[in-house]
Length: 486
Image 1 (cartoon, rainbow, N blue to C red):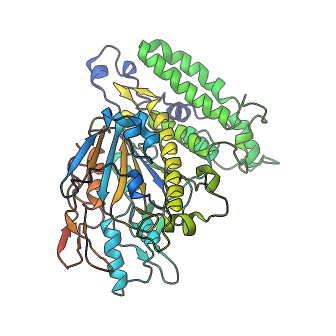
Image 2: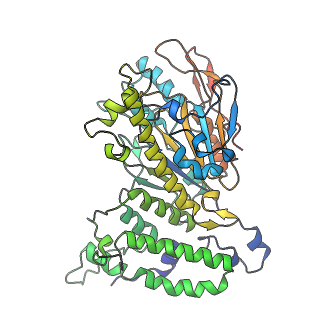
Image 3: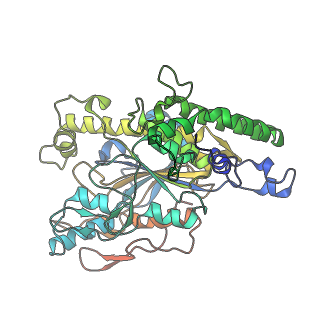
């Protein structure tokens, strides 16, 4: 049976140096224990197709020419927009941003119109620019795709701990990837929760078999053997660590151990209900159950263990039954494309389906946040020391890329002032319009700078393109953070 690497395993469980934040281990009774702070993490939560503006916006309709904000903390659930009502219980930890513009993507539409590239599809350009904010790669005979290293990987480069993962990318695929290692080079993404769990735990056997072995076991057999009784193996280490901890840290460690056990059981591991022992070790296994919740738990595990500080989660596509739409309707062509009043085939019924579609995603986002918020850490919770960014590649199902909704959750260790809804007045002429130029809100590129600053990258004043032209040829600077967040 392959031998487990004890140090690597303990680090993955959060018991190695610099992992699970337990102040009473950092020099018992010392000033360091009192002053040590958990690391700041970031997660991106990505959904497709945009939203329906009237059912997510909470702006003051009489003050659209000026910046303004609402205090979310005192609002009743009925005061929340219909789309965001599933997030009401987390309102103290939310920062909802209204009227941002994916300016670099719109500017590329102008380039394509002028003959620089051939793919002007707003979905494709939105997906290419969402986390890169730079010109896409206009592939001959194919669609446009990301043209530079994406924000999640760039932040991971700066904050990753040597010997651990700089970032993890989980979930599914919409049309194109969002995360890129370089231009036209999608970053690896893990779609299987069980494979992601094994990856995080770090106890997969590795290395070639000895040449003298007459019949090397298959990979599946070695995985089952290596998995063994992982929690039993860890139990002794937990018990040896517990006496060194304060009461608060013992409770935290117990919560952490329960998180790992829950994951084991949800994947059908040892003791996992009626499924065969080691079922999750089968490389071909298809897990049943809610992938969103499993990936939320994996993110909590990865962050609390300090195995990584950057996670990107791409949501799966919803089925019509998930949001109450008739099965014969096509989500893209029938619902999304007819959900806003400017659509040629606008239908209030389709707008209602689209609203319910995004309410379902808001409920998923709430589940993701609650998993992080359930883990005590330092002077708050894991969510308090994280910023989770809910973003879409379009602002509406009719392909707008201005009037963008963005939701930040968690304060990034106190960096962001949460409990607010922040509206940004139109400050720029749009980079491109097929008709009369319109005034739009600030570029999302400024938010990217703010996120880098929250993660300690204070020397960065731009990400991707540093400037573009507006519809009239004047320069729009993309440098500097987004105001009114801190």
